[in-house]
Image 1 (tube, helix red, strand yellow):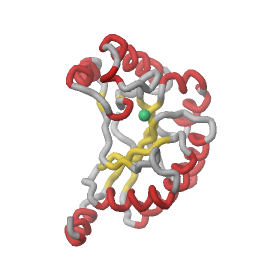
Image 2 (cartoon, helix red, strand yellow; image 1 turned 120 degrees about the horizontal axis):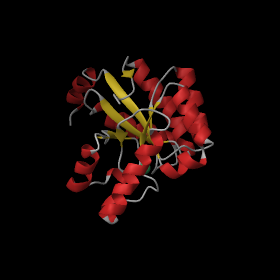
Image 3 (tube, rainbow, N blue to C red; image 1 turned 30 degrees about the horizontal axis):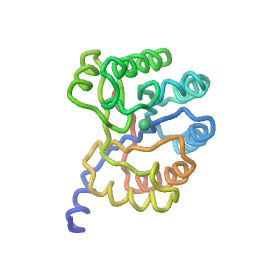
Image 4 (tube, rainbow, N blue to C red; image 1 turned 90 degrees about the horizontal axis):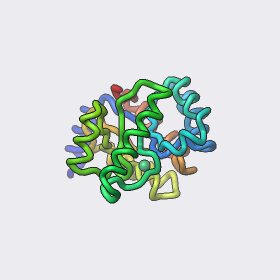
Length: 196
Ligand SMILES: [Zn+2]
């Protein structure tokens, strides 16, 4: 895409949502919460059931600090690759668990991997299947500057209301998050939570 088009598209980006998957994690969820508080930013956390069971106090802290949570399965298996009955339980149980802490309908499939049958199941329970628009690839690269560079390219092409994907289980996420928030604030792009 040429630079003028990317520039013009970026002008129509007013709002984004920042989401963190795979936690809660004792170290990185803690660091991210501290940064979000400093920056007065609210975000969404899609949590793995097993981690919720291990660190309930972190779940409470996320909610108490004004963020929203969602289900992300119990064990983070790729749900299209396991028997349907088992996949249904992964979804249902994780939603029951997050709903003990917050009233929410948000669910995200591990690896963003789902098929028609699985998405219909999520819908039949009244839950929302949340995907993403901008993958920061913080799961792939260890260097925060590389993550930030890739983010800048992807966000320039994103539509208004874009959902940004990050993970609260990697050390590099915290540093890149700081740069990403600065980038968005400099451009007066509002960061807000998803409707739950
Ligand atoms: Zn995940």
